[in-house]
Image (tube, rainbow, N blue to C red; front, side):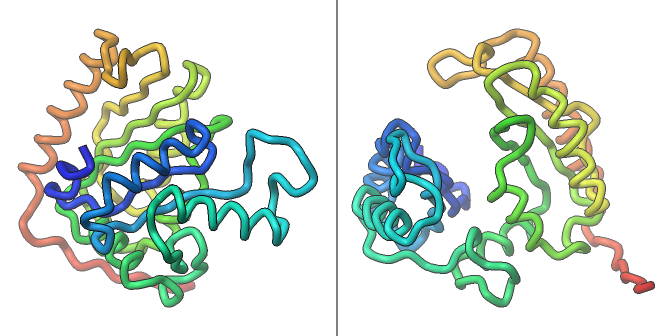
Length: 223
């Protein structure tokens, strides 16, 4: 799956040390070993399955311990100032800048995110905080999200759609949301969600085909 993603131009993987007690990082590490320099990998260190004064949060001991453990599981020997650690584009590594460039230069975007406690993840939002405000004008965007239950379903209309409205992007009318119960063995199986996904893809294809080859230049006025 990772090799297929690389062939399609994808170069960013988001994981976490708490996903399946570190197994996710181990799987990612094995998958990117042969092409490590191609990938920008983001992981996390705040949370822990264990309890204790130094087993979570932002203490120096916990940060050092978890970063070392994550590097070992990922099979890599370095950590850079990537997307999660930079406040401005000027602070980004070349690898992280390449992620932003891929988003800004794409002809169209399919944007999906997991939902935690009613909102998208902070790293997801931070990525778009660094995107040029004019880079996505008139860009076709299909939006979707997954979550633990139906109570998260409104995130696509109340958070994702307004986010891309700020960029003046063209989001398709039908957004897609799938909860855990809509999937079986990692595949979407719910007939209604599948039908809505098909509808969204058709709308997305129409937008992509109708998009002008040249984007209209837009200037910002400061007040």
